[in-house]
Amino acid sequence: MTVTTQRLPTLAEAVARYDPVLGLEVHVELGTVTKMFCGCSTTFGAEPNSQVCPVCLGLPGSLPVLNRVAVESAIRLGLALNCTIASWCRFARKNYFYPDMPKNFQISQYDEPIAYNGWLDVVYEGVTYRIGVTRAHLEEDTGKSVHVGGATGRIHGASHALLDYNRSGIPLIEIVSKPILVPPAIAPAVGRAYVTELRMLIRALGISPARMELGQLRCDANVSLKPSGATEFGTRTETKNVNSLRSVERAISYEIRRQAAVLSEGGRVVQETRHWHEDTGETTAGRSKEQAEDYRYFPEPDLVPLAPSPEWVESLRATLPESPVARRARLQREWRLSDLEMRDVLNAGAVDLVAATVDAGSDPAGAKKWWLGQIARAANERGVDLEQVGISPSDVAQVQALVAAGTLNDRLARQVIDGVLAGEGTPDEVVAARGLAAVSDDAALLTAVDEAIAAMPDVAAKVRAGKLAAVGALVGAVMKATRGQADAARVRELTLQRLTGPAA
Ligand SMILES: [Zn+2]
Image (cartoon, rainbow, N blue to C red):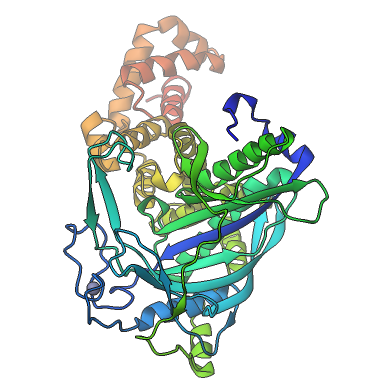
C-alpha cells in the first residue's frame, strides 16, 4: 500500500494510537591493521583493488586464517556490553549471491555467536533505559559496488558497475539489540541515544574509529507498531544502512508515522527491507521479506572452532576502559558542568568531541560553547551530525587558544569558525587569509582612542563630567575604526583611563 507524505500523521498522533517496538542492528568495522582472514591491509581510501589477495578475493583453494585481534576486539566489546562470552563457538557460511562478495558466501556466525545476552544502559533526558543486547557476533565485510553512469550513483539509471574488493574481508562485529520498548513518544530519540552510547563505548575500547560517514558504523533499524497497550508485536520493517545519528532518529520516526498511516487506513504492513533517503527524509520499499530467506547456513569447514579460554577472557576483561557512565561522571566533574549542562552535551552527541577538544588544549567551557553553539547550528542547517560538519576538535582548540591569547575576540572567532566550516583551511590559515587578527596592541588602540576623543569633544566632555554611560559612543567609534578587530572591553578601559584616570 502506498501512502503519501501529505497524509502521514505526526509522530505524536502516531504514538497516541500505536506503541513502536524497535530492534537495532549495528555493524562496526574493526580498526584492525589486517583483514579478518588474510594479511591484506585495511587502510581506508586506497586505490581500488590494491589491497586484495586470493583469500579475500575468494579464489579456489585459498584458506582463511582467523585474525586474533578481531577476536579480542569482539570479546572485549562483548564484556563491555555485559554479555556472556561463548566458551566454544563456530563460524558459519551464509550463502547468497552478491556481486561484491566473491565467494558467494559470507563467513559469519549463526547460532553460535561469540557474545550473547547482555545489555547497555542508555541515558536520555536524565533517565536511564537498559537496552538488552541479544548477541554480538563476528563476520567479514563485503566489497563495494560502484554504480556508474546514473545521476544518483545508485543502481537505478546506472549504465555499468565497478567492483572494489578492498573492503572485502574487513572484520565486522554485528550487535543485535533485544526489542526496545520505551515510552512511545521518545522511541526515535532513545534509538539515537543507543547508537550514540554504543559509538562512545566502541571508541573508548579503541576497537574502531566508528565514523558513521565512512561507513565504519552502520545501523539497520527494525520498526514495528502494535496498538497501544497490546502485547503482541506487529509486522516489522528493516531500514538499512542508516549512516548518521541524526538519520537514526529521523528514519525511526518516519517509519513509525508511515506504518501508523498504513494501519489506521486498515492496511497491512509488509515485512520488507526499506531504504533510507537522507535528502527527502523518507524510506522506500526494498526487498520483500515475506518469505523467509534461506541462507543455507552451515559450519565453516575451513576454520577450527573458536574456544577462548577463561584465562584469556579474564585477561581481556582487565583491559576494559572505565564504563561510559563512570567516564561521563568523571568528565562532568573535570569540566565543572551542572547535570543539565552535561545532559545537553550528551544529547548533542558531543561528549567525545568536547573531550577531544579539551585534550587538544582547550578549556572545557570554550570547547562546549563552540560545539553546542555555532557548530551545532551549522550542523543542523546542513542536516549532518557534528562529526560530519567539517571542523575537527583540534581546529576548535586552536580557535579557543587564539581567543585565550587575545588574538581573536569572540566575534572574530565566530568568523574563523565560519571560515573553517566553509572549507577555507585551518584556523590559522583563515585568520591569515581573512586578515582577522584582533588589534590587541595598546599603543595602536590608544591612537584610535585619541582620534575618537578629538573627533567627538562634546562626548568626551560629558564623560569627563562623570556621565560614564556616554563612553559607548567613543568605544563604538574606535571599534568602527579598527573594523571590529579590537577587544571592546579593553577599548572601554583605555578610553575611560584617558578621560577620567590619572593624567596620561
Ligand atoms: Zn586478502
